[in-house]
Length: 367
Ligand SMILES: Nc1ncnc2c1ncn2[C@@H]1O[C@H](COP(=O)(O)OP(=O)(O)OP(=O)(O)O)[C@@H](O)[C@H]1O
Ligand SMILES: [Mg+2]
Image 1: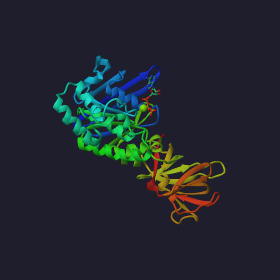
Image 2 (image 1 turned 135 degrees about the vertical axis):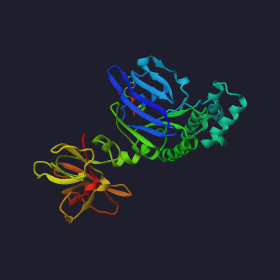
Image 3 (image 1 turned 90 degrees about the horizontal axis):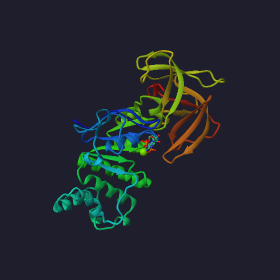
Image 4 (image 1 turned 180 degrees about the horizontal axis):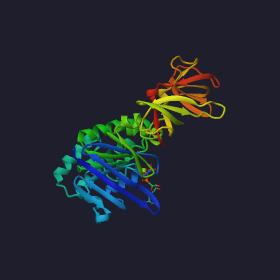
């Protein structure tokens, strides 16, 4: 598949602030790629560089085969010449216009023929499910409907790429979930290349072909949702995508895929040896972090049978009832370990318990 958006060592500074550093990424035609990361990690800046709303300091941006920005070569193409659609969080829908006119506006500005304006606008409204509201004024729409108008406005002139910056974050939780599914369906139907920005990890996992995890202007990992969740490359990614327990330890040995790691639990507790998957670990006696997700841990009232590995003795701190499951925090030495349990389990604070996990559910990571 050919690349539709290519970033080659893109960098953008604001004074001393290095907002985007050496970001390289290739988005295939028709692909849905999400930039995900905490606030201030450089997502919007990257998107604005692609759109042409920011001038990068270094690197190159290509849309299809066209170089649209390359500061070292003095190349910069204005946003209106990049053929890119944009949908942002503050859906600036024009209140004094009808839904139809809001969508048709972009075509009129581009001097499209009258008859074509009608068909294309109708088609775009149909795609977002708003054809029945074409004549209504934009002020008389719900948040979700307004966001759909913004979407129709972005797709109506058939751009090569659509950029989304947190388009669903102003909607309430239920509508947000519904719009996620609709947006992906629409994106697949139109087959348009999409670069989507969010700091919501569920949104990224649900919607994307690939996720780009960023931190402090730098790409930490690129992969499909399963990769990112099941095989995080480092502790930052493991902790940012879903909840996890990070246990610091030292590598004591390795047998094939499985590492033998010594975990310190504080002065009053002897260190325990556990086994976990190698991840990207290379050398012995190396400090590392074992990541175990709450849903991969189990709780036992008696010491579980077996070869005596991967069991911690601890004490319940508290439990949080979440309807479909129970979250239990257990103190093990100086560590606090979160475990996700069946919702019918009953545990009380200070109860003595054993926490266990299978070696292939733990992952050794570097920081
Ligand atoms: N116009 C600007 N002038 C100065 N600094 C800026 C400007 N725009 C962004 N920054 C800084 O660049 C960094 C990256 O900002 P950016 O808006 O790309 O983050 P973000 O990942 O989109 O965050 P959020 O999730 O909060 O929207 C931040 O530290 C921000 O303060
Ligand atoms: Mg932003």
